[in-house]
Length: 311
Length: 148
Image (tube, rainbow over all chains, first blue to last red; front, side):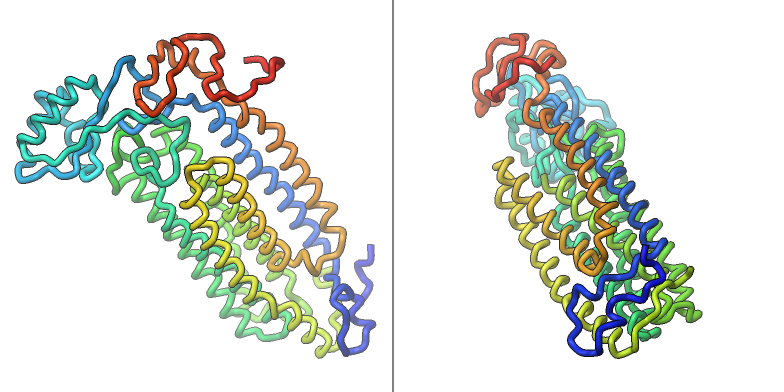
């Protein structure tokens, strides 16, 4: 095609050239990158498709507020006990949970670590009421919980869903900001402002790394730091093996995070190149192509955030 | 064939770039506002699933569209680029649409649950007895042709 032809804007006098005349030139690099992005679209659609299948196929009672994920719900009424606070005597409460509650020491520890969201797993109503009375006598502040089941963890319900939506919404905005600095870097080099281009590239790397940092922080909280109630995970931590929801979450956000990591590495190389003056107003395709990839990763996150966190 | 584009006289290039540059900050503002709207929308309508999903998909599509149109320069690109994007998007749409029946007609899981009791939580509507084959607990129309 018209690869060697000068761009149409060349022919128009330097006046108010109409925008359609500025169709950007077609380069092999751009075609290749868009083709790559088309395959990436299919890759992420594949992930989203599997997510739909898993989610739609999830049994109606797969998640509940008082039993670990995927536990068969016993027949008969059951109640869990929410422990708001332990009170003055930690040891007394633990003792009650061990003896009257019949829980193993590690289970007791997990419940108490999750206070004020500690949940004693569901048991028949009479047993639950008796246990609650003893817990109160030991000084704990408690509340009986009725069984509530879900086919999939509902957003904002912290008895089944551990995701911090506010933090991630902010992180979404962080990634959007990095897209803006990226496009400004390209605009700068197209106008020949090399220092400005380097600066914006550096800002993009910095903001992209911030996104990654927040995601690593989030993973750390989910997998190690925080102790979640029983409805989220049997062992108190939200890890890929905790539930189907957890493995979907880590697969989708993990693959996206890997893309961001790749993007940061790529942009670092571009940034170093810009410091050595490798780009100019007539030679900026590297910046442009790296930018295309970076914007695509941003775009994917916009969709993933909506699907995984909000719906 | 590194850079095929021979640049126009600098003032033309500059003007072009300023045209291209101008909306970026406005697009940024729009994206910020849309993110805020999406966040609030999700918390307001978290109880009404259909409204939630349709609304959120609309906001997400708007945001993704802005990123593609302005930041990825679709606005300035020739028609060739759609030759690559449209087939991919078409296949993506077909895949999701093909899975939609899964979402609309939930899997009947009572056979998996074994002896599921009458629903314990009082908020749940009374269900037919356990193991009643293919109860339509969700009261959704179920196409007779679908194999269970």
